[in-house]
Image (cartoon, rainbow, N blue to C red; front, side):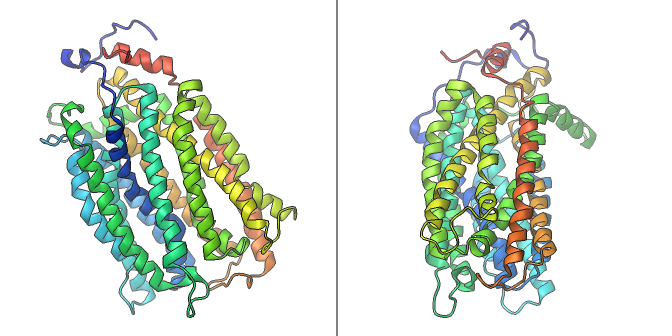
Length: 492
C-alpha cells in the first residue's frame, strides 16, 4: 500500500488528524434504516404494479407504458448526479444531507398519491402524458431524499464491517417497507370482489394503495431525518466554497468516478440493473399467467420475503467480517443467478409441479425465499463496497465525494433498469402477449415462449455483471491502509 505517511493533496492538517469515528448506537442505526421504507414502497410500486396498472387496468398499450417508465427512470438517473454533487457541496447549519431529506418528505408523498389516482376520462395520449409527468416527478423527488440519505453511511462510520451493518438496516427496512405495502396490496387492496374476480385488475384497489403508500413514505422519511439529526455536528464538512465553471465541475466529477474499483461496480450495475428492470416488470406476469397464482397466493410469496430480509440482515454483516465483502458478494451473486431462473427452466422441462397443484405454491415459496435472501445479502455487501470507494478515491483526489459515488451508482442502475423494463414490453409484444388477458385463457405456446426468452436472458445478464464485480480491488487490508494514509487509522 506504500508509505502510510504519504501526503494527500488538498487534505488539510485538521482532516489528517481526525479521530477514529465512534460506534453508532442501535437506535441511530434503526432510525436511519427506517427511511428506506419510502424507497422500498416506491420501488415495489414501480416494479410490481405500475406496468400492469396502466396497461391492463387503465388500458394504455404496454409499449407506451414501458417507454414511459424507461423515460422516467432515465430522467431520474440524469438528475441523480446533480443531487449527489449538490449534497456533497452544500453549506448549511443542518449539514450537507439533511436539508434535502427534510425537503423531500411531503412532496414525494403527494406525487406518489397522484401517480395512482389519475383523473378519470383522459384520452390515451393525455393519460400517457399524465403518467409520464407524475412518474418523473416521483422519481426526482425520491432521489432528493435517497441520494443524500445513502451518502450518510460513509460519514457515519469509517469502519469496514460497521458500514455493512448500517447497510443491513437500510436494506432491511427498504425490503420490509416495500414488501409490507406489496403484501397489503395483494391481500387487502387488490383482493377479488364480485365485480373484479381477478384482484390485480381492480382499479379502486390501486387508488387505495396509493393513498396509504403516500402517508407511509412521508412518515418514514421524516423519522429517518429526525432520527439522525443529532449526528449532524459529527458528519464531514463540505469543501470550502470556490469558483468553478461547468467545465471544472465536469472534470472534477470525471476524476472522482474514474476510480478503478468504482468502475468495476459501475459496469456490474449496468448489467445487474438491466436484469433487475426486466425481472421487476415481468414478475407479476409470471405470477399471474405463467404460474396462474391468485392474489392471496402472491401475497404469501411476498410476505415470505420478510423471512429473507430477516436472515439477510443478520448474515450479511457476519459474512463481511468472516470472508470479506467481495468474496461473499461474488459467491452470493453467482448462486442467485443460478437459482433465479431454475423454476421456469424446470417447468419448461415439465418436471415442476403443475399449475393448481397443492405442491406448486410451497415449492415456489422455497425457491423464492432462498433466492431473495441471496439477492438481499449480495446487495447489502455491494452497497457497502461503494462506501469503501470513498476513502480509496480520497487518497488520490484529496476529496470526499460520497454523494457523487452513490449518485453515479444510482444513475446507472436506474437508467439501465429503465431499459430493462422497456425491453420487457418489447418481449411481451414480440411473443404476442395479449392485452386484457385473463389467467388460464392465454395460449400455452405464448406462455411457454415467455419463459423460453426470459430465463436465458436473465442468466446471461447476471453472469456479465458478476464478471465486472470481480474486478473490484478494495479488501479489508486496503481499506485500513487507506484510512492510515488519510490519518484516521483503524478503530481499535
